[in-house]
Structure formats: structure tokens, C-alpha cells
Image (tube, rainbow, N blue to C red; front, side):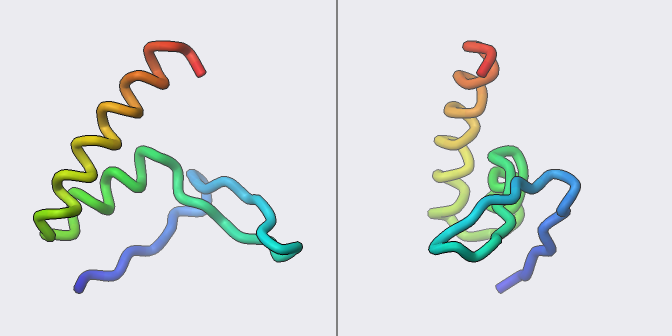
Length: 60
């Protein structure tokens, strides 16, 4: 299974249970899913791509 480094320039910082964490952007999540080679990730990448397109369309 490939590993992916999170590019912190495109990550969001947030807290979970008081602990700081970095969260991948939707576009990076899509790229990681596409690169994984797993069929289920390919489907998810397509779904997330549709979501990203809708978010951009709405201007959010």
C-alpha cells in the first residue's frame, strides 16, 4: 500500500479532543484516492470529485 505525505501548505489545522491535527484538503484527498490503485478508492475519488465540483460551483 502506498503512503502519502500530507503537504501542510494545503492542509487545514483543527483540533480533535483538544489535540491539534492537520486535515487534507478535499482536492488532496481526491488525489490520494486516485493514486492508491484500489478500486474502491477510485469510486470514492469520483464521488469526492463531484462533491468538490458542487462546492466550487456554489462558491463555498
